[in-house]
Every structure is written in C-alpha cells, then in structure tokens.
Length: 330
Image 1 (cartoon, helix red, strand yellow):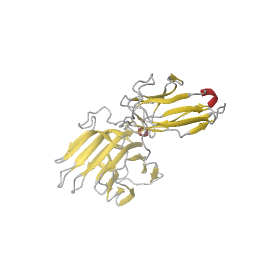
Image 2 (cartoon, one colour; image 1 turned 180 degrees about the vertical axis):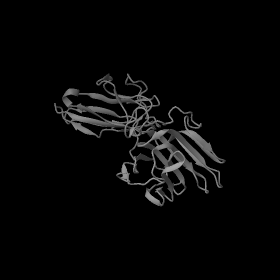
Image 3 (cartoon, one colour; image 1 turned 90 degrees about the vertical axis):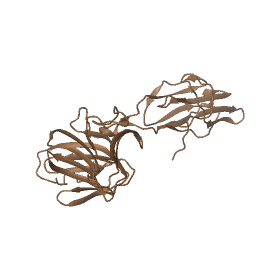
Image 4 (cartoon, helix red, strand yellow; image 1 turned 30 degrees about the vertical axis):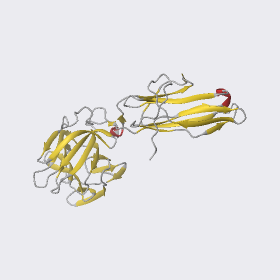
C-alpha cells in the first residue's frame, strides 16, 4: 500500500560547481493562498500523495519534469436511483419498503469500504421469521437493467436477490454456500463470492431470458439464463431478504439503479461525487504559478523546471491542495 504523504515540498539549491539538487520532504499549510508556517504533516487526510524523487539539475536551459500524484482515498457517493446520499444515518432508507424481524435491522450507515451512505442489513436471527426484507415496486418492464453494489460478511448465508412479475418469480438469484447462484427450476452456480468485498452487479433481461455482469465479467451471455417461471411479460418488483437460520452476519447495498430511472446511463452507479470540490495549484517561492485546477479520484500533476529558469539560490516549489475535511497542504 502506498505510504500516505500529506504534502510535498521541493527545496531547490544551486551549487555553483555541481549544478542544481532537488529533494522532497513533508509540510503543512493552513492557508490556500500563502506559503508560510511550515509544520509537520497532519495525519488523517483522505488524500495520498506520491512525491517526486530527488533529481539533479544542471545550471542550463534543459527542462526537467517534477511530478506529484494525488489520490483521493476518502468515501464516495456513488450515483443511482437509490444511492442513500440524502438519507439520515441510522434510519431506514427512504422510498423503499422495509421489514425488520426480531434481532434484525436494515439501516443507512455513514460509510463502508469507500462507499458513503450505505444500506446495512444485519441478521441476528436463529429461528423462522427473524429476517430483514427490502422491496421496491415499479411499472412493468418487458426489458430492462438493474445495477447495484452488494457486499456480505457471510457469503455462505442465504440472501435472496429476486426480481418478480407480480407474485411470480422471474429472476431467482441468491447468495449461498460461498457462491452467487440462480434457479430456473434447478439450481446453478454463477460465480464464487468472497466476504467483505463490494461487487458490482448488473442484471439485464428481455423476453427470452436474462444475464448478469459481476464486476464487468459477463455471465449468461446472450440472455441465456432462464426465468424461474416462464414466460413473463416483464418485471415489476425488486426483492432482497435474508433467510439463514444461523444468524449474526451483515449484508451491504449501495447505489441501486434502474434503466428506466431519470438520467440513467449504463454503469451510472460506477460514477460518483466526492462530496466537495478538490483543487490544486503550483506555487514557486510563494507566488502562484498555475491556475487552480479541480480534480477527483486520482490526478498526476507535472511541472517543468530548469536550472537556468530558477537561477542561483534556494527555491521553494510546492503543490498546494485541499482535502474534503477542509485542510490545506503544500
């Protein structure tokens, strides 16, 4: 894992007989517009920084590129018809039908493995009737797509992920025995599922059958998977629920999206917002050299220097940037 650096300072010193030496160390600054008050790095930022290696510059016109890589490792709001972004942490999700049996809960939590505002289902049940259930109904869709993220702490425990036409099973997909499975009258394994990893599922259906993509790997290509009860005229209900008699496990859902939802495009829920604007600029000797640039995810920042352009003496070239907590660094 990359070592986190809160910032990068390049201190440039010209030696009259041996050219220019550049080296890096960590500092912090609290003002986006002033390069001052150099302190120790602040821990806890969601921004990781890969700083430039040491380079030597000759006292001449040749340009050398200094590069930093900024990576936002904070949690992200993934887009979707139900992304839970506006839901209150600790509450049931708005707009969806929820049932919580004894010893079971289904609530929005603040964060899970880089996903912000996620639906957490806990099943502590040990007897029949102790389960949680999540449903949504909509107009009948003869063909369509549903996408969502799923994570589990117990892939050996049963989790229903059904799609219905009215009261009839259409797509009968479920987690059990460490696998993602489906049943079209007999059980079939789709692929293995590991614990504590978010998987992106994309379920497509049309008249003759359906297919599912798991983290961009296609299964049932050409809509070759069969419906549980066929034929169907469409799908109009989504259903998630637990069903294990051996409880004490968690499932997580995020960014549920439909192809008929306003603004939908394929894989929309792979896109996200980080919840605030991140910016960077380069300063040289306290003077801003580049315009402020917005960024998200990851960005490489390049800046060219030469011994001739810098001149003899000590020079401070800094990348100045903020994080989502409002801290500024250089």
